[in-house]
Image (cartoon, rainbow, N blue to C red; front, side, top):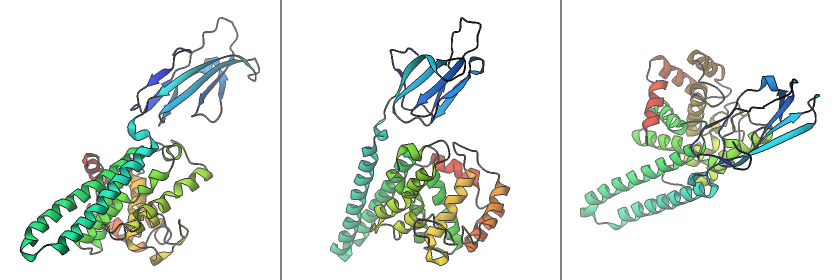
Length: 340
C-alpha cells in the first residue's frame, strides 16, 4: 500500500489480511504500534520482532485508516508514524435505505395481494369460481415468493448466520407436524419462521455483523429486533399470528426472556416453537466466532433447558426427532443453502 493513494478492496471481500513491515537500519529492536481505525478498540504495541499479519472479517463498506508507528525505547511516545487509507466499496444493498425500500415494496405488494384475493372471491359469480381459484393459487404463489424475498433480504444483511431463517422454518414445521398441525397451519409456521428475524433490519450493521461478543449496551440494542419485527408484522393478515412469532421468539418458559417476560403458556405456541427451533439452529450452525457445537452437547443442553428456556413438551419432540433421524441437521443445511 502507498500512503498517498487509498487501497481499494471490492465490496464482496469477506476477509482483509494486513502484513505490516518495518525496514530497520539500526541495531536496536524498536517498539511498533499498530492500529486499524474503525475496527480496533486500541493500538497493539509490540517489538518489531513480534510483528505478524492481522486478519479482519466483516468489514462494512466505507473508509478506514491503518496506523503503523515506531515508538521510543519505552514503547510510549511516537517517533514516526505512517497512515494508510483503505476503502471498501459499496454495494447497493449496503445502504440502509435499500432494506427499508425492499420491505416497503414487499409489504405494499402483499397488502394489495390480500385485498385483491378477498375482493375477487366476493365479487365473482359461482360459475367463475374455478378460474378464480386458479388465479388465487397463482397470487398466493406470488405472496410466497415475496415472503422468500423478504427472508433473503434479511439474510443478506446478517452475514454471521447464513440461511438461519430457512433452517429455523424447517425445524419449526417438523415440530408442528408432531403436534398435529394441519397442512395449512404447517405452512403458516413455516412462513413465520422465515420472517421471525425481520426486525433485524432495524439493527445497525456494526452490531448485527460484529465478529466478537456484544457489549451490554450493544446487546440491548440487538434485543430490540423482537419489538421492531412485531411492529412490522402487526396487522399482517396473510399469515395469522406472524407478529407473535417475530415479537416473542426470545421469551423463556420460566419468564426470564424478552421483550415482555412472558411465562409458560402465556407465550404463544407458535413463538415457543420458533424459539426452540431458533436456539437449536444457533447451536448447530457455524458462526463467525465459533464452529457448530457437538450434537451430544446440544442434546444435553436441550434437556437442561427444559422448563427454563424451553417448553418441556417441545424439548421431548425435538429430542425424539433427533433420535429417530427425522431431523437431519446436515441435510437441512444443504437444502437451505440451495433454497431461493
